[in-house]
Amino acid sequence: MKNSLRCLIFALPMFLLACSPESPAPSVDADGKPAYITLDQDHSQLRADFNAMADKVRLVFISGPSCGICLRGMDDLNESIVASLQNDPRTRTFVVYVPTLGAEEKHVAAAVPLMQGPRIKHYWDEEGNSGLEFQKALGIPMYAWDVWMMYEPGLRWESGSAPPAPVFWQHQLPGLPENQMLVYLKQALSSHRRLAEESGRSLTRDDLSKAVVDGALMRVRPIMMTVAAIIAGLLPIMLGSGTGSEVMRRIAAPMVGGMVSATILTLAVIPATFLIWQTHRLKKIVQA
Image (tube, rainbow, N blue to C red; front, side, top):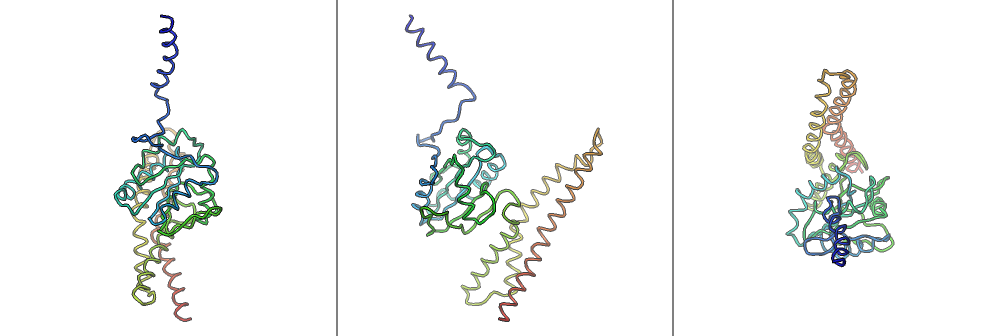
């Protein structure tokens, strides 16, 4: 009886801990394999996995596991891009979680299920050095996180050096490295330049115009969705009539005006300026 009582006293706390709603999520997947890999200071495992798949197209995500906006953006990208590639053996995806916004390892297990598949690996970088390494690769003046990158086959990450520069990358939050419209315009221009070279001719004014239109159209949907959501949230504040509404109205009105002017600047002024600038450069090349 005493032995049974001792067993019960010992087992009861363990049972309560296991049933507690605050107990951490398991760090293994459905197959019993680790859900994520903890990186050392040299990122040796990430580098080894990256180089082992050098013959494939690789997507690299860097995110904070406790950043709700970052995880939402990663989930959206998973639905639109990554999930459709899980049946393609030519691709691999690496997701690196860094300790931004006070994130800790306990947050990683809850973030891992947002992006799952047989060709996806997750990593936890407790020191956060990977953000500094990819900052060098991207050539930006600040820590790299909440960002995703695409690497073409053949690129390798040599030991003792920063990762190679990706062929394409995008920040999910606006305004960090440079205006995102410029990123898309440059990408579209590069594509049209390659098409012209493959056709055995030089880039023309019509090619520039088409590149600007193509690049700008890729930004219309995300910009309009963001602006519409923000303005919809500000309108009740502007139209409210309760206590303190006059003060709130003075705050909301400039924000609405700023969103409208920023939209016009991004969708109209920047593409037009980019076209004029590139046309001027093209004329110089032709004259030379």
